[in-house]
Image (tube, rainbow, N blue to C red; front, side, top):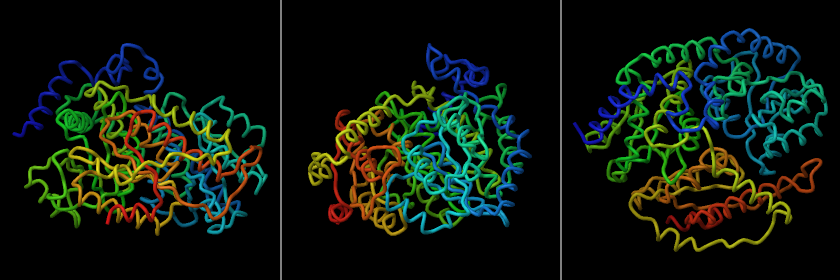
Length: 509
């Protein structure tokens, strides 16, 4: 038995001895912290699937009514936990016959907003405005933009917590529907609540199967199940002990119809554990390579079958630890999401971190506000990218933070660069589009380990759009978010430089 496997075995015994899983289910905040702040009121994800099972008819009725009224697209405006699960459900299930197609808008880049408007018929679109707090700056800007385009309440729906400014505005404007989510769930744990299930219903996903799978997983991971027989506890122990053993790069290799699940896991794990100078570094979107391109800081999660199976076996023979993923079909996503949520909570316990807060996110928001107050276009120190790349060493990881208009062409270029960096430097790489990643891995970049090497990529905007009711444009907001994050990273002492996409490609040649 390897040292890591032995550490996991001992950890599972300790979880039983300390009754950790039983205490999690009982809502005992001392599993993570002496005080209950942002814990006692953040454990609703353990049972929300049971509440939602009684609302399937309501959700399907809403979706049918939208389709019957001639709506053909749902534009989901949301960030982080409000958009990632819907994206997974759309990519995994596809669109059922007669259902609405779902388009996720989680960028403030004006070129991307204009491209969306050209791609669909706005006259037949439902705008779903999703924000737990009801104050998310990107989402509120999207709301006002589309309200100016189509000021009809019947064309809008909101998903938010009770009593938020968004809930009040939606009532005032006569939205078609306001879904008030249970407030005891953090955004990244909300996949099986209204935040995930309203969009899932709109595309015609199998809600019965999703929620039945979640219930099956909840029973199999219940409070009286020994940790060694609890799939979530075992996964959490491997992840947490992996970090303690120096294998903190959780490299996910999902494939087939559930490949998109990795993007949701990335946010869940990064934002939950990346704080207090430690954390799990989820690596999503890296194609599997030969063992020679990996250091000894990797822990893999990979499917048991498919075309990547030979590479997975190759990695195992080279003594890289591999956790086998058992998720193959979209209907299994409900169970998988529940297991990952509980596993992340267990990993937080192992690492001694608070898995339900995000203490370093506000710094970038404050810096964005400062940049906006100056017009959003202040000159910033770009840093020396050559020196930055030269600083990369064993155990580091390179975070490519792409403040560009997302699209297939730029994604392909960025992916090619990250793989060249991985192969040349034998370090893990991550890739996130801004401002989307600020609501996902941004907490990890600032609050996690100092092994991060941040390369911010900023492009030129072709067009711009005013944000109605504000003294700035989407272009100003986008630029301010890039500058704000750069400032927040430097304030944390992170290694960071700003480059163009062309400059990034030249760096990796």
